[in-house]
Amino acid sequence: MTSTEPTARRVLRAPAEHRLAATVRALTFSPYDPCARIVSGVFWYASRTPAGPATLTLRADGDGLIAEAYGPGAAWIVDRADAIAGLRDDVAGFAELAAAHPVVARLAARHRGLRMPATGQLFPRVLRAVLEQKVTGKEAYRAYAATVRHFGEPAPGPVPLLLPPTPEAVAAAPYWVFHPFGVEQRRADTLRRAAALADRLERCADSAEATRRLTAVPGIGAWTAAEVVRVTYGDPDAVSVGDYHVPHTVAWALAGEARGDDARMLALLEPFRGHRGRVCLLLAAAGIHAPRFGPRMPIRSFARF
Image (cartoon, rainbow, N blue to C red; front, side, top):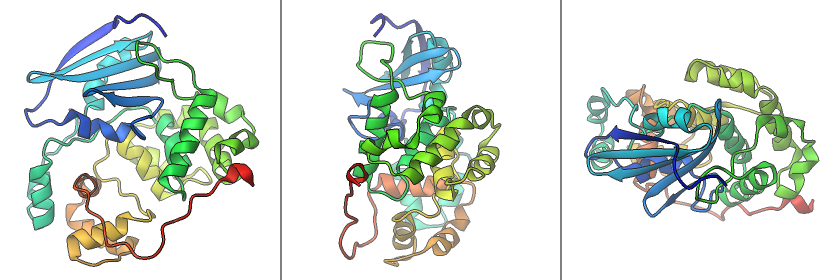
């Protein structure tokens, strides 16, 4: 913990309809995320920046947002605050695409204040996405929270947050360190491989290059890469191919079909190319999901295997 007084501050202009909490919720894993959370309408975000540790806060104020930060990396993170708040998200042309489908048009109007954040920091998102591979949300969160607590350090500022683990610490850890966190060797090894390449991955110029480099890492496929670049770069076209639920949701919302596979999902999203991921985000924001059949996936504990 450091001083309770912020060391950097910036006033951001935001559209009147901007919805801060809805936009930055993509950066939190749950209300109890050890690295990022929303408290009384204020967003707190702990980060390791090139200039050092920092904690960013964002809060609505009149016609805009106030960005304040703590720690050695405060100036760096405040400089990116508008991107993290989704204010660099370019929605040009989306209204015309959305008008082609009544459901998408309605959701685009209803959620016009929802923007896509872009953190500019890749490894923290890789950590979360890899731990989310092929498990339930509860399993993924437990593994993520336990991993952060094991490797993390206190973040600057007055709120008790933890900094994300460093790639170096994750890469150096043997796979069995992750076992008590509920992470089997496959995901642990994938995470360790990505951590070893984190410096190169962080230097990717754009979403396309990051996707190519991520999917070259054994254990990382299209789903994980899309989950990473959508938040790191604010990529509005990133679609989570291989997701268990999203193809069904898209098929149900756009065609009234209770089930759909990846090919059907991509065909239905094709008219929105350039903003396909944004359409999926709007469906999620509206709480739309296909009818559910059969039992839910059971929650397992790899820690006991």
